[in-house]
Image 1 (cartoon, rainbow, N blue to C red):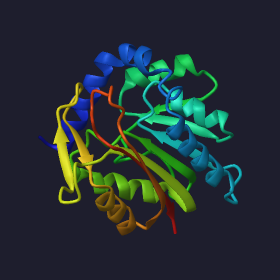
Image 2 (cartoon, rainbow, N blue to C red):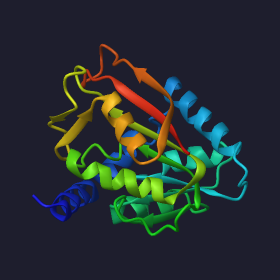
Image 3 (tube, helix red, strand yellow):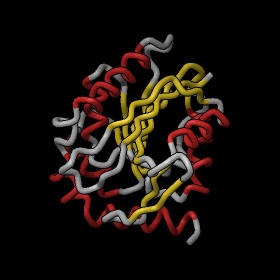
Image 4 (cartoon, rainbow, N blue to C red):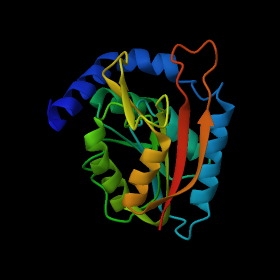
Length: 217
């Protein structure tokens, strides 16, 4: 399957479940204090940069609830998603914020114009060989000193760089945190810190979740 085919299949799958997805996950941060803490740290670092007017992109924003959360943390946030239906739901639910249809591998954003980028589980459906193009695009749009917060499920051990699994929407991929951090470094994004969240016994997926924070040199 080509890159375009993968993007099209994933977009169509999320278009089909967008309304159900919005209803199921609109309060997803409520019971996730560790993730809220990491988002708060990300927001504080972004606000500390010199460019007080710079924007923050929530890539793979879905129906926009995390974009709205970032806005509540004092960031000038906007959302980008490949699914037109998700974007329409986000616009209807958060009319005061900006949402756009777009591809993470080809952003309609000027070079070095962003103070921050959030990628919350938004690369999980991207085949590993195509992720470097997305990282390069994130590095392109971030201003020097800008921050990236990227969330993803981790592999089962250090011997596995990536690992596919059967996601309910489309094939998804888990990453070795050190390998993804190395990929970020290759594109000028130095790791600032990371958080590893263990799954609860009741979670359907018994994967570690990693939140990796990086800064553009």
